[in-house]
Amino acid sequence: MRVKVGFRVPSLTKRIAARTSVKRYVRHNLGFKAPRGYGWLTNPKKAAYNRVYNRTTKGCAPVLLLMIGLSVVIIRLIIK
Image 1 (cartoon, rainbow, N blue to C red):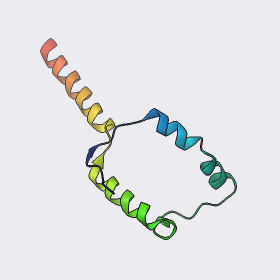
Image 2: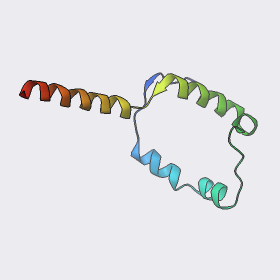
Image 3: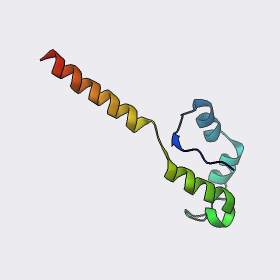
């Protein structure tokens, strides 16, 4: 399995699918959730992948906010 390195690309369809899945409904409403941090027991391969993925990628929102902030500052400097 290859781990992505760099920026994550947001996907609206995946976000909606994750929130409306039958698996999620069963887990949350019928109480079949394992406590936080038990991923190593329930699915070690996925837990290892997620640990590496979350440490090697960055969300795109902070970068976009930084770019917008810098452009606003530059525009204000130009206008003065």
